[in-house]
Image 1: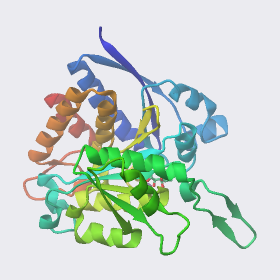
Image 2: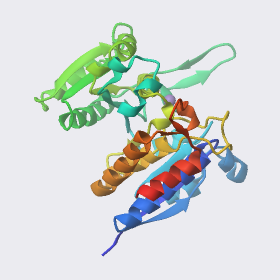
Image 3: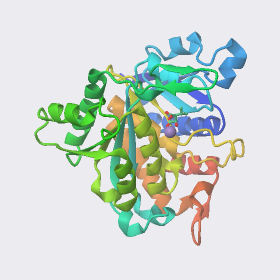
Image 4: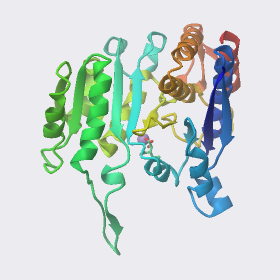
Length: 339
Ligand code: IPM
Ligand code: MN
């Protein structure tokens, strides 16, 4: 029997519209080739939802997402995203950053520092300072970085498990010299006795940021809380040459996930149909991986490599010399031709 999946597509705003549309075409093509079907329900959050329902994350959208096999998300400027993450407890945010041999010259770092860089950022996504007690007074305000120990432990488990299937090394970002009541070091080290094959290293987050630029090759899995993970993972965009290349998955403990490019709405180029769809396509690959459709992932991966090796580049990658400038649709057509 043909396997069938149902996903919810939330395009959002800015280039979210263009890249989700593009990624869906690639998804449908790879589904056809590997004999499964994907039903796509469209839903809205953010500004559009506010105009239509008076709230950024309408119940209609939540109900469509519940019981689906995944959410493909574009980008929003404001509103809805944090609610969506929290509603489905998408606590485990995975952001892989892997340099590609044909794009080494695109980064501002030297190619020799970038060769072989393959980092997985594991970011806690539903707690920390984003969700702690906060208040705005007349002339003051605060946000609280609050973590239950179990919340740190459950994201640490994810990082340790991922490391087991990789190079067996986890670097834990912390700031215990100023924030000693959030003992990431102790909690993760305690847990890691269950993963004797994984080496755990802890690093103050400010030093970690510097190390990512000085010597990114030293890292395998980087584990961080919500805010530190947000900041550090953007550095990943600088390493690979364009944030437009990066995808992400945010998973809950049942394995439901939302899949989202890292780049955001990019209002400066929105609507011009020149956005790089690779971040959204990378996110689709993570969804396929989560479904266990490994052959489909391989097909997209091969097409991806092939297209980059032949020199096709969207504008964010600043094509030079023999490289060929393509827009969103042209890049998608290259995928459709090779799938
Ligand atoms: C991200 C974004 C979001 C975050 C914003 C839009 C709230 O920067 O997904 O990295 O900080 O989590
Ligand atoms: Mn961010």
